Amino acid sequence: MPMIFVPKEILHEETRVAASPETVKRLVKMGFQVVVERDAGLASFFSDEAYIEAGAQIQNDVRQGYAQADVILKVQPPLQNKLLERQEADLPKDGALWVSFLWPRTERPLMERLAARKVSAFAMDMIPRISRAQNMDALSSQSNIAGYKAVLIAADHLPKLFPLMMTAAGTVKPAKVVIMGAGVAGLQAIATAKRLGAVVEVSDIRPAVKEQVESLGGKFIEVESAESGEGKGGYAREVSADFLKRQQETIARHVIAADAVITTALVPGKKAPILVTAEMVQKMRPGSVIVDLAVEQGGNCELSEPGKVVVKHGVQIIGHRNVPGRVPYESSQLYARNILFVLQHLFKKGTDLKLDFEEEITRGSIITHQGQLVHEIFAPPKTEKSAAPTETAKPTEAAKPAEAAKPAEAAKPSEVFLVKDTAVSEKKES
Picture 1 (tube, rainbow, N blue to C red):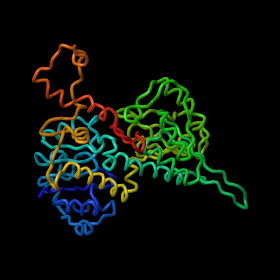
Picture 2: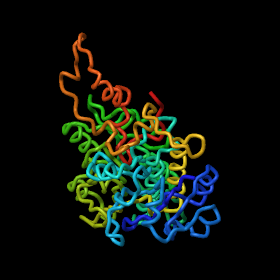
Picture 3: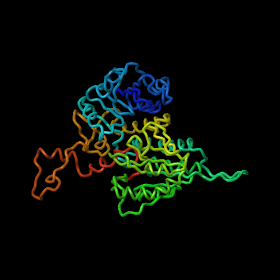
Picture 4: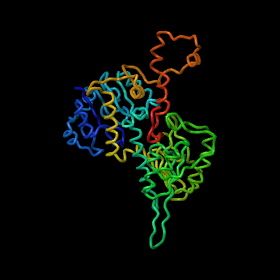
């Protein structure tokens, strides 16, 4: 019977957990032995007793849990465990399956460390956003919560009301909210701000999202340019400096007139673009609020600071880290279900692990396997000769496996999905 281990997250202020009592019950039914570190779910309001009732065992010795586990479920990538004085990546036994967010494009040394342990590492942030994988899409589930919570944070800090109010003492005008980025978080922010009664304007470099913005009651701010920020799979792509300048000039007057600005704009594998400049902040009304959801990737606001709430020119700029972790109960519930669906995909006939690298979801999400970095993002760049072979050129026998490991169709997901929130809520398979 394969053993699943769910350790307690050790990142400071990480309140989420990778399994809930609900998903534990379903994993036990699938035939797994589930072991949960003591108090692993406490910050998400899941008691040890609830896990035991669902069929899990509680483990005090985290080192033993790692050493015995066939599958390790986490939220955060492996970190340095100060109590054990060891990196979490060094704790699993050889051949274990590790499932968590990993961010492999920016964490290659960590991926090499997992490979050295012969761990099969499944990155929840690398799942292709296709229709078959929607129930596994942890980026979307967590971004939905972040977009919702960002609006509540803005409303809490704003010294005025969101909705229009007609009172005997006079009329209260609705707050004006500008949202940067119409990805999953942005779309949820639009819907939430509208439900609270605000007037919502939205900016995005992808013209294709205009219809979705308007369907939620937002007004789309269009940038006059022949260039589009539409990337593959519906994601945003990096745009030219000229386009970014045009966008800043277009949205500047909207930002200056706004009561609250919520920024969610990210580009896969890149630093977050600066959309709200220091000059814009200086011209905003005192008491206005900016919530920068991109702060952990550099921030969309030039003056935001990671993990801090600062006041600049009378404007409150909120740079909270890990916004989904501020709603830990639902964040953990949804993330745990995402992982449950991943395990149902990977384990055929109950507890029989089968990694099919011909299948798109597995191929796009497994980063390390059998001591190697197997994901195509780590493949050496193609030379001009290999990129444009002549008609008579024939691959050698040695070259064939490498080509099979990175077919043309497989290149599509990895170019676009390393981003914490840039996609619209539903994507169809190509």
